[in-house]
Image 1 (cartoon, rainbow, N blue to C red):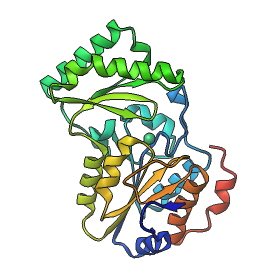
Image 2: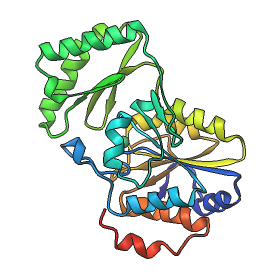
Image 3: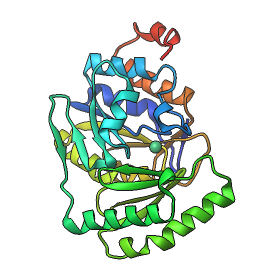
Image 4: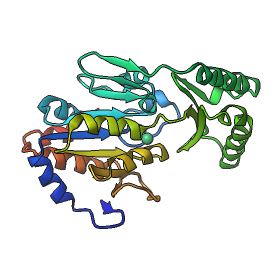
Length: 274
Ligand SMILES: [Mg+2]
């Protein structure tokens, strides 16, 4: 684990956790809890992650929240936990709370029209096979393509989509493995801010993520908790800490549990096959 910029004292952070009124562990999914797979349905968590997250859910001393670009209904089956944690899906557009509450921001007519025009253009250009249609966006995936082909496709999409993103309702954003057409103004930073507001002032929180779309969340958590870049290779980031998955990620999560007094579960992680 490495600090980004000024030294980040992780031991002091874990001590603060112990004395906090409330705690929140906010986690991205793809590339953070789970390695990337060409078939996105096969992107299950790293070995050892499920048993630790189940322990968080069981002990209930920390508000566990997944904040993902995936739609919620696509995320829950591969997450595979004993019970569902709180999930913000589609970059924060939809939210599921463990008491069964589900909320989704309604799209405006102009936004729906823009997405429909984009879908028609992608079909016309025969790019549908690369597309993931979400409740409020379209991700165009280039993972697995030759690098030059991938760059050409992204460039083509950028030019082709100028008619929808130019209106101000939608925006195109790069991510690790493609480009995504999204609703402007809805991002993971807003989700993090909403959760922090609910927690109140004496809360300690962390946000862990890997991608460019996580930078909004890293900026939002500054001053309220720690942003953690989870990535094999470093890149410039607004996070305060950088760790490599899966071993340093597991160590971070184990450190969190240990800071709150739990050691008896450690042996279980070694035997975990999920
Ligand atoms: Mg990610």
